[in-house]
Image 1 (tube, one colour):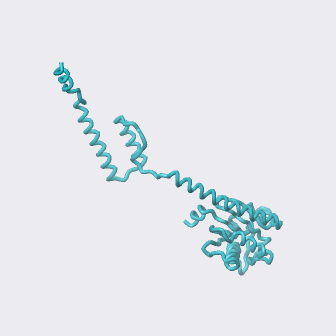
Image 2 (cartoon, rainbow, N blue to C red):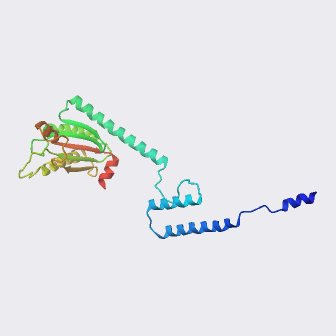
Image 3 (tube, rainbow, N blue to C red):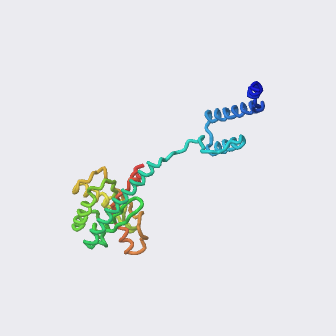
Length: 247
């Protein structure tokens, strides 16, 4: 009886059909062929995805995560850091906004200084009537006091600050300012030099640019609108905006 038991265990179980060996070799060769083509040539990513997809389906391979194409990876930790930095920066700009807004209300400067929070950062509009005489780029006496107070509030900000000069669309043609381009640039430079020379701002932190009449905040259709467009903007740039514009 023990012999029969041993004999039954020694019997060979049926294996894979012979054709499976040939099929397996064929699959291996085809895969090696595609890998060789991929390593030797530059191919379109989308077309390659389609080829791989059809190849997988024809062999009955279940689709999982795609590993043939290297994609950009964003780790959760990095995303959390970016969100945290962005939130901190926005809170800092909001604090500056509130501080200057309080100063405007206390000194009743609503018609002289306007504030606006934009995607690029905090924009402080210095209206021409309060800071410059018409067609001139020299600060008024009262404007110096206002700019002194603003400079104190901006002095310790660790951000790039861009000074922008703007005019309306009324032409100017003087010996000193042949056009609105020269006037807008000169006013921006006046404010930059004031911040550097009077309050010790770093020249590396500041930049000056003139836009002439080509960046109006309202249409130049009425005298009151043109008055709003004649301004110098102090723009406290967000980090992302600073990097983008530096490029």
